[in-house]
Each structure stands twice: as C-alpha cells, then as structure tokens.
Length: 189
Image (cartoon, one colour):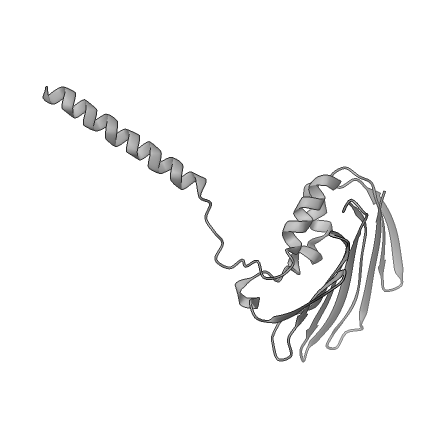
C-alpha cells in the first residue's frame, strides 16, 4: 500500500512540475529597457523586411566625389545591415521615456527631442496615408568639441506598406580632418 501511495505521490509531483514548466514557457521575459511610447521603428522594419526578402535593390552610393552603383537581392540579414541606421534610431528605450515630445496631426506623427534632453536622434517623422505608413524620416545630430555629424534618412513605402525606396545623406567633420559627405539612394524593384 505504501508503494502505491508513493507512486501516486510521485506522479502528482511530476504532473505539477510539468504544468509549472508549461506556464513558464508561455510567458516570455519582458525586456525592461524597452518601452512602447513611440512609433516602433525596429518592429515595423522587421515586419517589412520579412516581406522584402529576395527583391532587387538598385543603390547609388556617393562618398565625397566618388560614386558607385550596385544591384543586389538582399536576404533578411542583409536588409538589417542595409537599414541599420533606422534600426539604431528606435527611441523606444526606457532612457528616452520622457525625452521626446509627440505631435500627431492628420497623416503625420512627429517625435522630437525636447530642449535640454540628451540624444542623437533629433526627430522621427512618420507620414501616413490613411492608416498605412507612407514614409519614415529620421534626423540625427552628434556634436562635440572633436566631432560633428549630421545624418538624415528616409524610408518610403507603397500603399500596401511594401518598401519602395530608402535614402541616407550625411556629413561629418572630425577635428583636424577634412569633412566627408555620404549619400545613399536605393530603389526597390
């Protein structure tokens, strides 16, 4: 009788352990540094690059006076590298929870760095066509005694929110060096 009782107890204990494991697996860990106060640039782009894998991209890169044209078909990893500027500009971090003012008007959402707040992302503008995103424009500024950099980037989307083009333009000046200028214009075919 003790053996039957012991087996029943072991079975109950094993069942409880299995149930508790399943409950833990169904609840993902939350990232305490991520917030959802601003437009979710990274999540939005992740969704778009999944739909864009394998499409053809024609890109013109201009660095100072030199220019180069390339054509390629990016996979998801390449897309992440291509759009890294935009991924890095996601301001949904706990450190920026109150750093940006938000203005919404018909067809436009603007997050702008408040005066006196620290951050290199100065502004994010999301232009909408109805409920669909038509473009995302990001302005950055990094300025100190030894280094000055300004970069702006824009992603354009069609009526179905498929990527159609992206561009970057910027200049930087490092103390004691000549300024450099970079422009990237890419069309998605």
